[in-house]
Amino acid sequence: HLGPYGDLPAALGFAPPSQPAIDATGLLNRFGRLPAIPTDLQIERGTAHTHDGVVITPLSWSVGWGPRTQGLLLVREGATGPLPGIVYLHSHDDVKQYGKEKVVEGAGELPAELAWVRRDHYGGRAPANALAKRGFAVLAFDCFMWGSRGFPATCMPARLAEVLEGADFERLSVMFESMALSKYLSLFGTTLAGLLNFDDRVALRVARTLPEIQPDNIAAVGLSGGGCRAVYLHATAPELVATVSVGAMATYESMLDCHVAPHSWMFFPQGLAADADWPAVAMLGAPRALFVQYCSEDQLFTPAGLRGAHELLEKHYGAAGALYKGQFYPVKHSFTVPMQEDAICWLAERMMKS
Image (cartoon, rainbow, N blue to C red; front, side, top):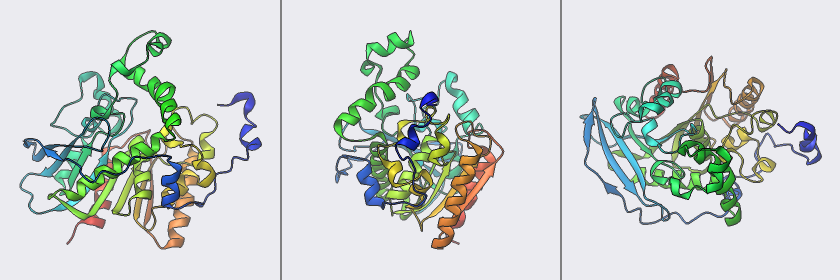
């Protein structure tokens, strides 16, 4: 926290508006300079295989800069015709060597030392596979900074290893995001939130080209950092029909005391809070359907911050005649199996044709 500078927010007039003072275009402008969305995605398909009733097809595409994005398309074995689609946004976890593997089983498993990610954050199961088994076509993919879109150890400044007194890749990656990459992005006039949202909007464009997916019936799902990305995609992608954001919603003011440092820079693009409180960013996606799952015992947010965000969203969506559902669960920061089941049922109600 700010300690003796606790009066700094007031001195600067920090007061995020509860209603957005910008629209989706204004949000994209707040993201800073962004590359042009590519017209040639250069999509490549690998060899499909079946795992536990789910057909998994490796995909890759180009966003126009940096390494190719590696993704996995999951559909239920025997499914025919285009299906309701899900773009699955993996979580942060302070684990950047892996992205899509956190939510997919049967293709590039997490190593034993990272088994805690799925155990503690996803209730011990692969949520993308669960969605596929219930009739969705799911695209899980690596985003900027993770997995195939990540930075190798050779990019890590030697100074980081000196500070950390070690060369553990994941610890270096956390430091690299804050101490090196954020400086590059500031120098270039862009933001981490903007580049992540760019990757996610390109992935949505990829999903809409796939024959397995109904192009006008796609939703986004994500936990934690993925939940943050889901809010941004909800706000900036009118092609989406619904969004599920998990463990990623609270008011900005509630984060000031002890809950800024635990979060990634993706939550805090320069100047955004002057135009919108964090719940107000989600409001930009209305009237598209939004389901926010709150973890009542979330160690990354305060109970008051969760409740305040819920009340703001409920009021805004109600006034707009739009569909918002906010549900609280007595759990720590996670997307448990019961939470996943609630999300699947809610999505099926919105997207499955009778």
